[in-house]
Length: 560
Image (cartoon, rainbow, N blue to C red; front, top):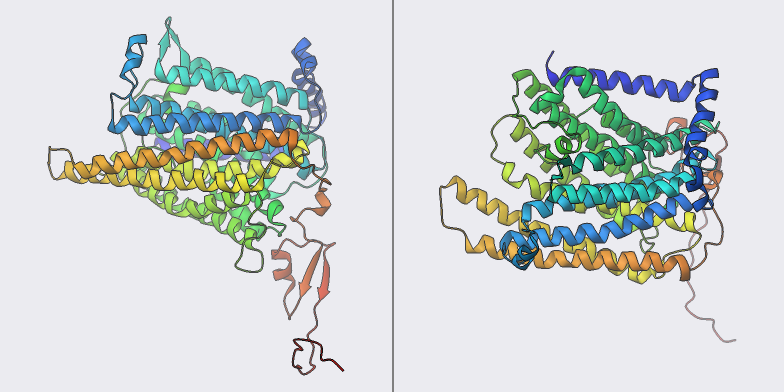
């Protein structure tokens, strides 16, 4: 049995076992573990637990606000990386301080800031509010959620420093940052699982996507260690994509589905399709990401190895990545139809967060298919498209991950903080600047990369002036993304103090996952009614048609 299949079998088995244990519990042992976990989350922190009050929603709020700061930082680093790609000496003055700024290193730092800073903190912050809301209980420990957010930020800072200088005083900086990051991830996972254990409510599909996103990463690491693939290049590649499929894709799917339903006021289009997203995410290989697993290798302190792909690994890997198109299409369609409800127009289109979610859902399919072509090209050993792998990953981050997580955060923050963003108009302007700058800037950079690949294949040594111009224009336009991040950050932070107060909090029974009524306009079947998310308590409301003949409409009242 080759590396990919053996690792995936272990991963699937551990995932199924984890699901059963979460559902059924551990009996008497579970009570002991629950008490010990609660002690470790709060009492074991000692005086640190007294630094915060632990108000309801404070954990989600702090995580999201820090994520906004990282959004600005990641946009800035990406912009500088794009600029240095066409003007390598733009920051040559920093060499006087001993720092030689390189485009590739700044891209690497921007990915840490974007994935673990902005996207990661949006995912965790939104999940800290969504999961307790679905379970109808309070978060197990708000104090721990608040304190761990600052430790997570410290870990991201360490990772960014390590991306520029791998070793300092003989210490592996990225590995240290990973250790701190994993410590916080364990605390967050324990907090969420304890919240699940404190509830008797049935957890909706978005909640399970969030849980699988949290537990999937450690399961993936354990699986690659048991299978022995941690020393092989193909094992590193698989681990990189398993981590991306669980913590990032699964978690983003969960918070996006919840926010699309919550923000639009429409019932989740199909719980069955949402279930397809869960199964497809766990039992396929998500193609989204870079072909080079350097980030996963560096974070886990592994030794880089050349990838050796057997015929069986190639067939299995390509087949499972092709199957991953199913959950990608399912997620995109479920979000888009949920946002629109029964017509072709998005509900509440001007509400902060809805445009971001709509935009990210539209980008899922084209970038998912594009990533599939790049990954299968790399796995087959052809390597004709590896030159555009980096820009495809940047497009995935800025056109899928950040819009979906930012949109969810914008939907969650008012409920968590009690206040809306300061200005809906500013939020709309920030959306157009952030998304427009990312789309146009990165597409122009992609065109430049494709041009360079074509010239390289044609053995043309002279650089193309057109490619240079496109790359320059792309970096200038991407600056709009930096401005959009600034506007979003100031709008959200100002809203915490001067935004309109949220009038009422929505209870679970009032959410749109189980509609309270179903309009019956024609004959239908019970299967179709249940497919809309209806439950046993949903009221069927007949809508009768009138057979009366029409009359002319009076445009004004005639004077007698």
